[in-house]
Image (cartoon, rainbow, N blue to C red):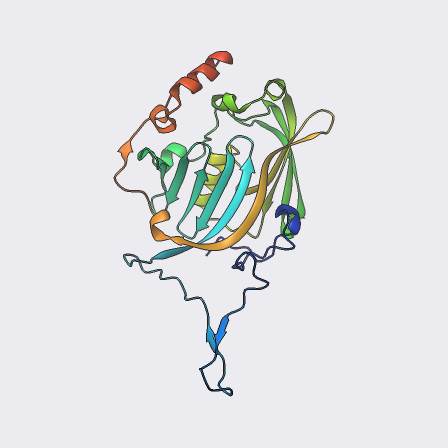
Length: 287
């Protein structure tokens, strides 16, 4: 996999856990994840039989076909709990509060935004989303500085930006998630961290930029803060865990049998979005 992590996460991003390796984890309540050993009955000298967990069947079309992915769990201000899955041939974002999954797979890198509950989807070819942002309020960069750093024991870079004033939430279409205090807050500084250990293809980087609304970030953002004039930080993205995982192949490939839909139909929130846009005196185009 190009998307791989070699280090282990510190306990500071897994509350209550002593440590969290990026490899397979032991079952809850188990002191350690040791292979099960069994001896032959009646033979005291027999060597223990070692039973390890079988490898996942990765062959497409088989009943138990699996896909190996890098799983990143995050909490974000704009989207809430978000799961990112990365493999050599694609990248996927699952935004739970909206009930949406963003599938983007090679070689064509068609973006399919799917609502599993309604089985509706919106398709966007790469030429439509490349170099753009899902957010209606774009981040305008004035200046930047970069430095080598580490986060959660992962090497990477910390990027500090001077930006044009933005609201505490990136998208005006998400105004229903705001509070009255934060909706009036403006920020002109931003800081984010990306890790060298998570290796993405060019297309995967572009899709990450599109979802994060940060054209030019070029990687999965593991932590992001907006900073006000007094130096106070407001977390926008917090990473909770990173690990390698096996998922059903059917959860990785593009969904089937869905009906094409507009953004309004996909979100099933047309009235809420229009009301929010009306309050802010902004235009919601519904596309």
